[in-house]
Amino acid sequence: MGGVSVDSKVDFTARSVLHKWPSLQNQRRPDRESYQVREGTLDECISAFMQKSASTRHLYEIRTAPQPPLVTDILSPEHIAELSRLREYL
Image (tube, rainbow, N blue to C red; front, side, top):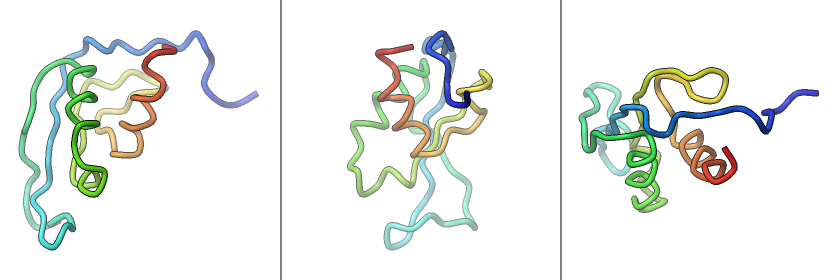
């Protein structure tokens, strides 16, 4: 069967932080620490992320409490975009 069941729940009110990685020529700087750009709910952080230019989204991540199986403690840009699409169904 695989995939995500329709009854999977995500708490979009969970406290979360949107982080941005310092960049050089639009590439993450692995020698630097990411920094906080927004603190709020998971929903607010996803919305703030989705407002960023698609060409810079790879520089962001959301840190939150894990909610298996759909939410990990650090959400990658691809994961955030997928959660954004799933929000209205969960």
